[in-house]
Length: 381
Image (tube, rainbow, N blue to C red; front, side, top):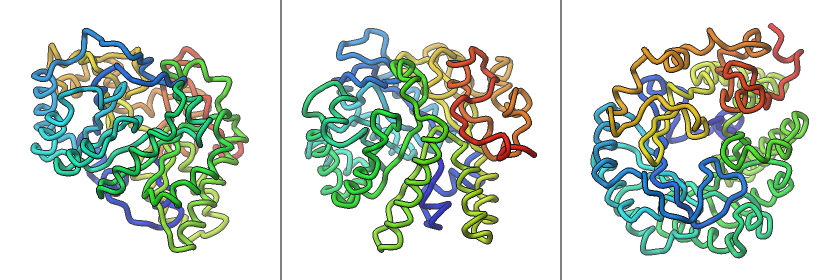
């Protein structure tokens, strides 16, 4: 995650130590796909979910063992995702267990099932944050979700969290079908007093693989990042700051730094040290994913790669087992990156960006990420 509000506007944020401090490199943040089932039909769903019961999902007891192991392993954050995690009946019990073990518990949801009763329950449990997917205004969002009326029910779920004092934010996946809605998203978060917004770059996984041709061009991506930076700064200057982040394209880091070099060289020097401490993409080291069936992946998008299954061996053992060649390589991946990434001046800041996108387009894990929009002149050493 690249924090625009932190890097460009100088804000202090709750997870600064995880992103820029010594805590980042100790233990991974874990995305757990609690279920594959979902009540919507999102056209870019990385888990390729449907509204059916899947027979291979972790049982409550298996999930409890996973959470206990992650806590003992000192993973700082567990993100309960899906599918739609609210469809898992034992979700409150499992979230409570994570909180009781001292973990930061985050829920990633489509928001349609966030009733006042459920939100009150999560507030009492101690959920740290609820991220709600919102990919546009009204018809745009409904088109992405495949169910008419979803925008209204999602917005109501966000309002329920806000009114209960449970921190909530929106998650917006950027592409050509919805990038024109970004200004309206800023207006929405301001009007609805939503404290956080994450703008995700598209990763080619699951049904999202069918949207490669709808991904932003390099020039479009640069324009969108400039717009997000401008709108974030405007919020700060008007005394209504929000936590704004971009996600899943670590070219954003060097791009922000280069803009600051032109606008505020002193601030740029501070940002450079923060970005180098962050180190960019950390799939297979600083972030990991456990799927609904117990498979362990380098991240939530790279689902064709599994290091093992927690039904057979604890996550804590799987994650440090460098007898697996790819696991060992991901722990020190800058040695294996190829092409323009290998010679890029920003490699220490970006970490080579997303291997899942490289594999999806080039068929080669260590090929350059095709979504990197930096020019040859900008990456030259």
